[in-house]
Image (cartoon, rainbow, N blue to C red):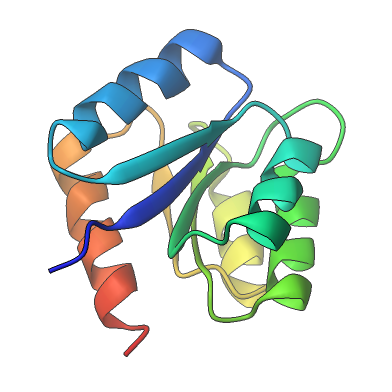
Length: 123
């Protein structure tokens, strides 16, 4: 089986690097983008299967990036990360085409479960 191809998008450097390391230990192919513009570059040039996307970022918001990802390639699955009290952003993201959303701080096992579900839904 091919390695799952994931793009992590979050402006919190330590969080995103740690999460990438943990997913790579589980044999996933992980790329990192620190902002929405960089994420869109990955989507256009080296499309992932799943994007794990923080909603609250400077510049383009996660919801803006989600809309653009779906316009570029609607098959890419997006899992949103929201902060506590930002459930409405997760719900809005689902309306815009997100596969699901998780509330920070995330549980790595829950994220892996959602990643697997997202990839399985693509077939």
